Length: 99
Image (cartoon, rainbow, N blue to C red; front, side):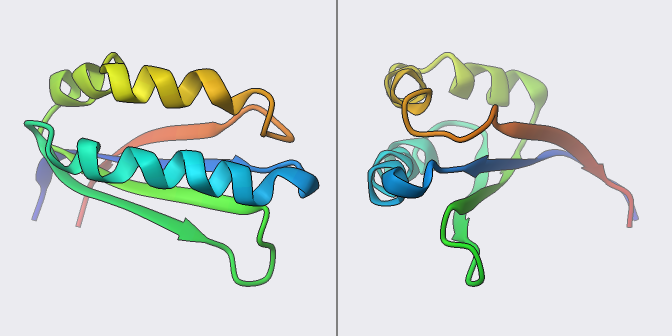
């Protein structure tokens, strides 16, 4: 069974003294993103063993829907705040479900 939606795994590592600030910025993205056309799933996880480690699990109907999200005002506003909060560049990967 193949699924033609786009899956995204976006991992971010907070600076140790910026965990709560990063969490607040990421949480602000959830509700407006879930309302976007083409958003199927948008979940934020925090690693139980390492609280600096955050991961979004996303599913989109198409690349176009994902690209619209990346250019949305709420995403752009959140992204502008990230540099001062992150220990490294975010690791963002797009996938297709194979089975």
